Image (cartoon, rainbow, N blue to C red; front, side, top):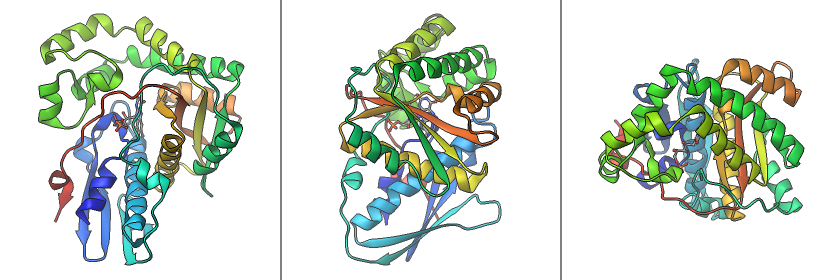
Amino acid sequence: MRELVRYATLAPNSHNTQPWKFRIDTDRIDVLPDFSRRCPAVDPDDHHLFVTLGCATENLVLAARAHGLRADVSVFNATADAIRIDLEPAAPEDSPRFRAITKRQCTRANYDGKPVPSEQLSALEASATNEDVAAMMFTAKRDLETILEYVVAGNTAQMNDKAFIAELKQWIRFSEPSIVEHRDGLFSASSGNPTVPNWVGKTMLNFVFTEDSENEKYTGHIRSSAGVIAFVSQEDNRESWINVGRCYERFALQATVFGLRHAHINQAVEVPEVRAQFADYLGIGEQRPDLLVRFGYGPELPRSLRRSVDQVIIA
Ligand SMILES: Cc1cc2nc3c(=O)[nH]c(=O)nc-3n(C[C@H](O)[C@H](O)[C@H](O)COP(=O)(O)O)c2cc1C
């Protein structure tokens, strides 16, 4: 059961705050939110937090199957803030996606611009959807340029938002000793940046991390990508956000199986005004675009660390 939790903690998660707790019982594991690790500035309604719990759930289900346990997932109370995974013995089901759990990463680098074969695009799209969640995929240059405009608009708003910047700084780990001490947060090297002592990093950030430099970086990132995928849930509540997380993680693992990298460009869906304009562009009416993710072929970057299983299991 602890090993299943370990696989769950390898899931992507917003700002690498790892906002989860796990409760192990004889034949089930509950996945619970750790609200002490929420990010009120970038994620005021805990949307990303519940998407994150969905990602962890998907890993746990895949790991359970591989270890000979069938998993039945339910959201178990009225406020939908806990996920119950009932487990019962079944024939072990190894799968390429399970094997990809330890290889997957969010890769914030330029990719090589090469296209993805169309049958793989179809398989990726299929992995990213279920009855509650639709995926919209874009690979045409003209679409990527338009999407870039929404990302730049969102990024510009965030770079001018003091609360957003203060929160982000709190979670950046500039040095190796700092990432090893905390085992959470955004490690500089995992974003392709140099590692420096924390005080140097915090000072440098004020000069290096500007609206223009960030917008330029995202322009390179999007123009070098093979495509972009938007996840859109039918409803806008915690249960749907958990479902979005499960679909996104399936996509991320399938992309890893195909040798593809991916990274988030959520600026277009995090700032409410920009999100509304972006929803118009997607033609989805009142529905919420949940996540925006680019993909393509690119390098592997240093990994993000996770806290130990002991730190996330509760009685
Ligand atoms: C709901 C959600 C939102 C995220 N938003 C962003 C984002 O806006 N920008 C970004 O660079 N990464 C984003 N990420 C990726 C996380 O930062 C990443 O998963 C985390 O740092 C752990 O790194 P890893 O996925 O490489 O293991 C997001 C992940 C999730 C699950």
